[in-house]
Amino acid sequence: MKKILVLNGPNLNLLGKREPDIYGSNTLEYLVEHLKKLAPSYDAVVNAFQSNHEGELIDYIHKADEENYTGIILNPGAFTHYSYAIRDAIASINVPVIEVHISNVHAREAFRRDSITAPVTVGQIVGLGFFGYELALKALTEYIKRGE
Image 1 (cartoon, rainbow, N blue to C red):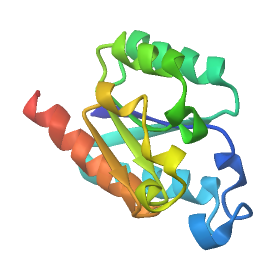
Image 2: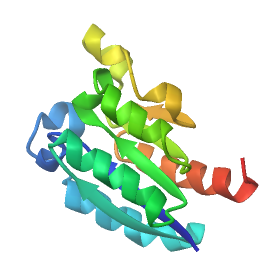
Image 3: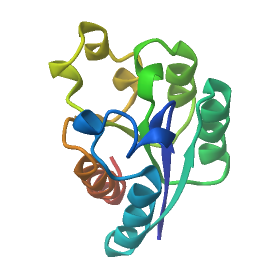
Image 4: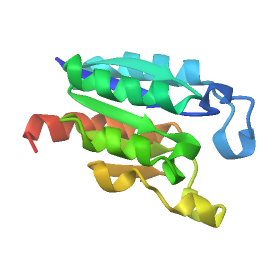
C-alpha cells in the first residue's frame, strides 16, 4: 500500500470562497475526501495537510521522509514562486513529489509562471482544477510502482 501525503500551501484553505471563477466552488475538504476515496483504487492511502506557514510545510516535507511516505502531491501556492526553503526541503528528501496547481499559472500574471520548486519535483500539473490532483495521484502511484 502506497502512502501519499497531499500538502497544500497558503490560501488553499479558502477554496470554495476564494476567487471561485479561478479556483472553482468546491472546498479543500471536498478535495481531500475525494482523494481519500479514490486512493484505494491506486493501492494507496492519502493523508493531507494545509498550512499558510512555510515552516510547517517544510516540517511536513521532512516528516514524509521520516514517516516512510512513498510520495507527495504538493500545491505550494504562492510559495511556488519564491520559497527556496521549500525547494531545498524537497531536494533533501528521498520521496518523489509532484507539483499541482489548480489554475493555469501560465495564463495568469507573469510572476506565476516561474516555479522555484518544480525543478526538484518529478513533474508538474497545472490548469486542470481539482482533476489535476487526481492525475497527480495516478501519475505518482505509477511512478512509484515503476521504481523510477
